[in-house]
Structures are given as structure tokens and as C-alpha cells.
Image 1 (spheres, rainbow, N blue to C red):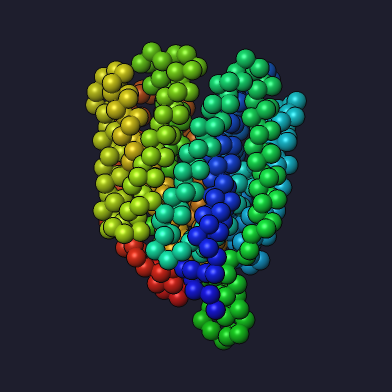
Image 2 (image 1 turned 120 degrees about the vertical axis):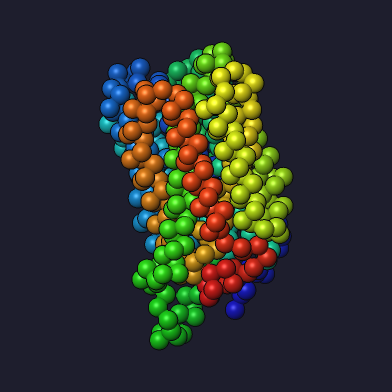
Length: 421
């Protein structure tokens, strides 16, 4: 039997597997930003109504379709293995991207968004489970952090491409989507050479050899222990994600208000925020999440973000205030809710329902964001300060949930964190 936290692979193998699995985050975030950036071009080219654009946002890779994909894909990962799902759903993703590359009618945008969202959603629980199960002992946080760095790298690359290709208009957007399709096809090839998770294989073998053992089916997630874990994750990350999802609506407003009206300045400031988040992950989350009190680390991230968001509610919107906001919220975001959600959602559940639990929690979070997105335009119309206070409140609630109920998993094996994975 192979230990749940270590295997026969070398350190180079561990990092290669982590990067190949973590690239799911790259294409997830890249899809979200690419779709958002292309909306303005499509709206002009195809005379899209605000209602149609709202539907696109709700069913995009950032919301409902990704949630449905995670729900279905997560269960399939536990039943048939991580490798089958995370390898072949990249082909599905590339197929969806091709709809966006060759779009000529509005309905093709909807089809492309839904297909891409389903593929991204299915890949997330498979990849996150694989990273946790293949990470060496005492390095789950470090390896999970790599996937989060890739999540922020995706938007930076996409934003840079849109900036360079801006003179091409819709053709530029097609080229950005083509790049994501190519990445997915390359991933399909590279992932075909990866091994299945030994932890999952061992758990399946153990279950087959002990048919009368305790139930390891999906019903186990309804027991108080695991139900509480799922509710904790949904509360902590789901409420935070309402802030993160809405951030895309009001951040361009900040850029316009402080005078950064050019496309170059807008892209530069957004990319700078993502770069701060990547530094935060690399310098704080990756080296310390496996060794220090995770509850205190999460609390620190929440406090930093709350202060940053509160600046916009309390102070006049000047350039220094906007820059302070950018640094604080992305610094806190890097080693905060999203990074810990990936880590904890893999640690808190047994192996044979790990991806199922991740799929359920991810689905609830993304679908909730999709529903919330219908109300964001109404809230933004009521005034920027009021919206800033609402978003500060989201960060406060998420921070309290995480600080009070966060697990203390630093230094523990995967079996210990799930108590019998």
C-alpha cells in the first residue's frame, strides 16, 4: 500500500504532476477573464442586450455551468478515477473554446460559455484532489499554492494578450480563445502520461477487499461530521466569492474614477493586482500554510482584505486610496480564502468521496455567484459607497466563519485530516 502523503515518485515528478493538474486553474481563470473582456466586443458586434449579457455572465465559466460541471465531474472522479476525468475533459473544454473562436451568432456564445464552464467545473475537483493526494508529506499547502499561482497567472496572460491584440477587435478575442484551446489540447497529451492517484487506487482496493466495511458512498457526506465541513467551506468561501465575483464589476469603475482611462493603464493595474496575489501565495501561503497555525494565517488575510475594502467605503476615491485598496485586497486574497478553500476541501473528506465533496461545495459557491450576478447591476445603480459597504460586510462574515471554525491541519497527514481517508 502506498502512503497517502507520499509515493515512489521523485520530487521533480511531484512538481510536474502538480503543475499539470494545477493548470486547470490557469484555464479556469483565463476563461473567466477572456469571456469578460470579449463581452464588450461581442456586445458591439452583435448588438447584445443587457439581459442577454446578464444571462451570459450567470452561465459562464465563473458561475452556474462551472458549478454543474463540478457537481457531476466530482462524483465521476470518485467513481472512475481522477485521471480519466482530468485528462479527457480537456478535450471537452477545447471543443467549447472552438465555439467561441468561430462564433458568428449570439447563440454560439451561449453554447461556448456553457461547454467551457462544464469542462472547467469538472476539472477542478479532479485536479485539486490529485494535487493533495500526490503531494509529499508536509507539503500539501506548498503544492496547492502552485495551483493558485496558476489561477492568477491565467488572467495576467489573457489581459496582456487582449492589450496587444486590441487593434484587431473581435479577431483579437478569437486569438485569445484559440490560445486557451491550444493549452487544453497540450494538457490532454501531457496528462495522458500521468499516473492515477495511488491514494485513490488504494482506497478502492481496500473497499473492494472489505465489502462489509463502513459506508464510503455519497451518503457518508450527510453525516454530521462531513455535513458540517461542507457547510463551513460553503460559508467561508461562498460568501468571500460573492465579493470576488462582484469585484469584476466595480474595479473598472475605480480605474475610470481615478483617471486611469486608457486601456493600457487599466490592464496594467489589474495585472498588478494579480501579481501582488501571486507574490502573496509564493511568499506567505506556500512556505507557511504547512507549518504555522492555519486559523491565525487565515484571520490575518481576512483582516488585511477587510481594511483594503473598507478604504473605498470610508475615504474619497483618490489614486492613493485606489492603489492602497489594490495592494491590500490582493495581498490578503493570495494567502486567504481561495487558497485555503482548495487545501481544506481536499483535506476534510475521505478519499472515495473527496472529489464529490469538492464538487458539491464548488457547485454551491459558483451557482450562488451566478444567481447573485443578476442583482449586482441593480446594486451598483444604488451608489458606489453602499455597494462598498455590502462587499466589506461579505469579507467580514467570511473572515469570521473562517477564523472561528477553520481546521488546524498543519503538519497532519491526509489520513489524519480526513480521519480515515
